[in-house]
Image (cartoon, rainbow over all chains, first blue to last red):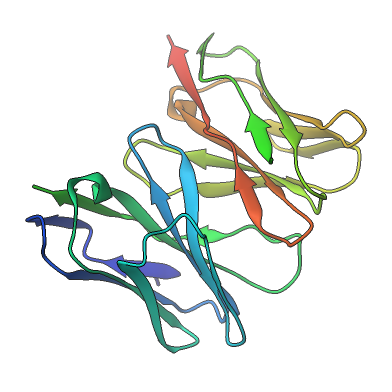
Length: 113
Length: 109
């Protein structure tokens, strides 16, 4: 059973389009995250979300928005895609407490042409 | 600002030992993590340190010195499959993970 699953794995789209990436976790974790990993392999937090609180990285453009229908899902919606949005996007989740690592999904490679 | 520093790339020989260093400056400290990431794959959890000292897990060990803002990941008996990027991450006072850019480890036969 896949712990954190995200779809699609690859996404190629044109500038200006709107797209969504889906993420689901079956670990019962309270908190979910979206990360962007650019060509330099640096992982940047975009959002963290649990039932109570959405924390937004202030550097993230408002074209990006997380949508959480329930505790096990956190989807990422992107409006008006730009070339610079091309990257690998990872979903992750974690349980409460500080000494647990994050479990990552397999990533979505987004290419904007 | 918050900062995690680790070498960009390291090369080692199969069967040898390699140490990957990580230094950090963060607003608060609630633990340090090491992750392994193979090319094209997701990061996977390797180790967690919150107290000073050495944590050993098979061929991998991780060390922490909070007073020095320093950690290292030690990999013994290197295998070709250990070729990957190794990411250091620190949980700050808000329990947010701050990530280093990763160290690409190349293993040669």
